[in-house]
Length: 193
Image (cartoon, rainbow, N blue to C red; front, side):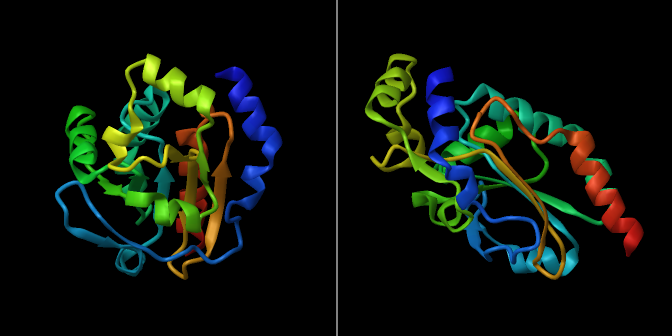
């Protein structure tokens, strides 16, 4: 897995992701109970933190989403909201939400359409597919398709004008945007008014 993360880094995929200063791709996705969430509507209320995770099967994703839950009140105190996106089916997203006691929107990006618009999607190679299957992780069951594509973990702070103020994209799935860094950016934005 370490070798696969290094190969992913060397592939240059992180350079394809949207960057700070660019306009965030708009989207509408179903939440864990099937209701549509519109980024534009979220931005109408304040900045939105958009975080992409690989799936409920990923322990690093679970840790990240729990860390963000712990700072959710502080995120809200800046006027911002938080959404988490994965290619999982709505049923899998609902299980993730309930299992981790998440109080923010968990969205299903079936087919990775939005992840692709953000420049994050890549296919797992044959060796990694077999390794995942050996671990009991069948992505076709989680994601509802046979593509074996997942997004790089990425977190974006999107201002109300839809411009990305912070873009954190990391090919090494073990590394995530730390809550303190996320809060510092949101607090700076709130102070600037």
